[in-house]
Picture (spheres, rainbow, N blue to C red):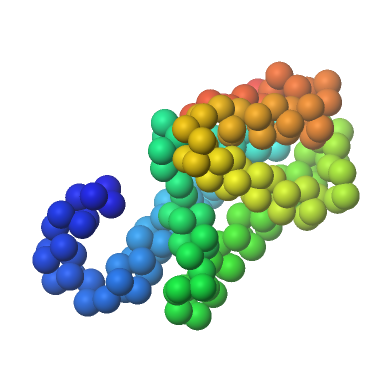
Length: 177
């Protein structure tokens, strides 16, 4: 997509007067899609294991063949060069993802499905950072299995005996208990 945008710079510049307005529009669209998928899971009545699995799948979908990053990850790595309004949007995205995941982890922990070392909020922050970091590492090394390593850790640490329930596939659903 980026190369297509560069090739069609005149068209992009016509619709987006500045780079910041273009980035804002990309982040807005990405956030709407991300939040829409999370809300859909809640609407489907999915349990905590299925929601956690789907959360991991969002990152696998964003990663593609290991050559893409989530737009929020991309912009965050260049945070020093973006205006304060975009930094605020980045912070809201990260906090919303962590809050959603914290709720899932608390529910799963309360039902005896997850172990949450350090508490649900700390575990959620760690997982979001691990998923995003895995995408960066996959792009840097060309080794697409980085996200799988994070999901394996997720199985081992969080799920214990429910280890087989969380899988690193795109857009998958898993049975809940």
